[in-house]
Image (cartoon, rainbow, N blue to C red):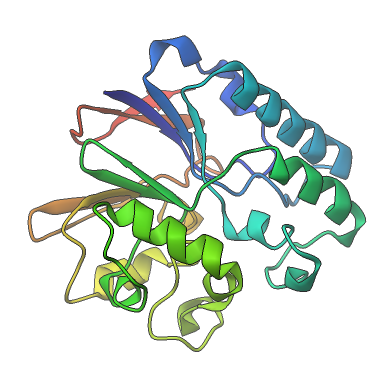
Length: 228
């Protein structure tokens, strides 16, 4: 499969430069909401256009980010920095139309918002054939757990963050890692960085604060940078 993945957009519309017909899958890694310099209207209009995009192209996949998940239920408000109470209702409604997931995997590559730690994976039931199926089942069953399971590096008190909160530095430090290649965003400071462990690679593609780039993964091979 020929796949294009794009990191945290936070209201940016750079994704419009993608030729969606060129790919078998185009995967958005989440964090569509909350931006430092964009207005509510700009952010919500962009999210609405993403909803329309998903209705137009069947090959588009949306993952959920921590900044998005906090808008899916009123009890989750203010659990992540940047929360805007002023557009909670509109954001929640648009997210219900986005048909998002916590994780997907294609060609033996796992895609999540922030990366999957082996220590966290051990805390959830994982009898499923695919890692992504176990993550989605656990996330949809208890989304609050995913939203509040945070390592001290990100201000929490858990040993391992969930796949919407994992810091790239946690992945660097873990001794026992998942036996699968991974693509994720979330850690802007480490955007573009690669870690290799036990024959598998993990790459953070939260790069849009630095450069307009997406990443192309063909047949599960190592990602190539694609300028946007």
